[in-house]
Image (cartoon, rainbow, N blue to C red):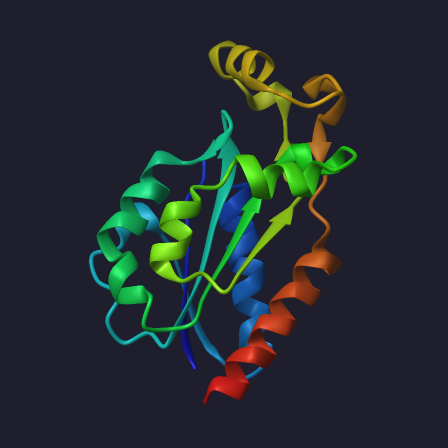
Amino acid sequence: MNVLLAYATTHGSSAEIAQFMSKVLQEKGHTAKVVNVEHINTIENYGAFILGSPIYAGNWMPEFSTFLKAFGSRMAAHPVYLWVSCIRVLEENGQEHVLEFYLQHDLLREVKVREAATFAGKLNLEETDWNERWTLAARYDGGTWPSSFNGDFRNWEEIRQWTERVAEELHNES
């Protein structure tokens, strides 16, 4: 199946996740194209969509919402999966918190997202400017100070397993 992996990103970590997912999909016999949502003008010729964004200031990226609003009704006729990356998932009950409070559920229903996944992200404070650090600290609603999560916490095996499961579901659609 021809799959579009559309992502938003702030520092490139989400782009790396999308690229990794693309390789897994190709290993499983799918054709996959990875594109930043800011550069998508059409969604024609795709049979499925895997969409991803980091959580930033308690929500996914604004350009991700813009993309969903522009193309959501057309994507809804196809299999659509969503993932977000967020440091908050590392905390106790973090995944549940992210799924409940950080996603725009009205848009997900409109697009008919089959499944939403959460993955731990990557936070490099040395590459983060002071304004962004302030926003992170001021908006962070977890129990552990965000600077404790300085590093790459992406679990590539977890991402692989989720993507392989999606790939299998897509094979069953064909």
